[in-house]
Length: 70
Image (cartoon, rainbow, N blue to C red; front, side, top):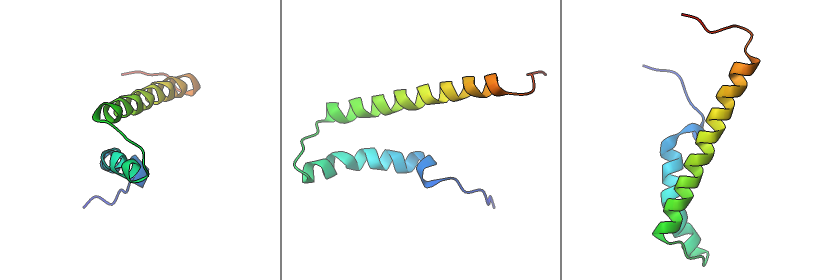
């Protein structure tokens, strides 16, 4: 059995569920969210995560103390 545990916030399932439920919660609060709004929000979140990953990779390579080799 795998004993490794990841953070609650690192779970794609949790993020997917939160994005899926968000329009209904906002509707209860009196805000209207269309399917296009939800899709655009998902695209924006994906773009932000992709950019953050790229920046983290660049930072990691710049600050690395050892070179890359085979």
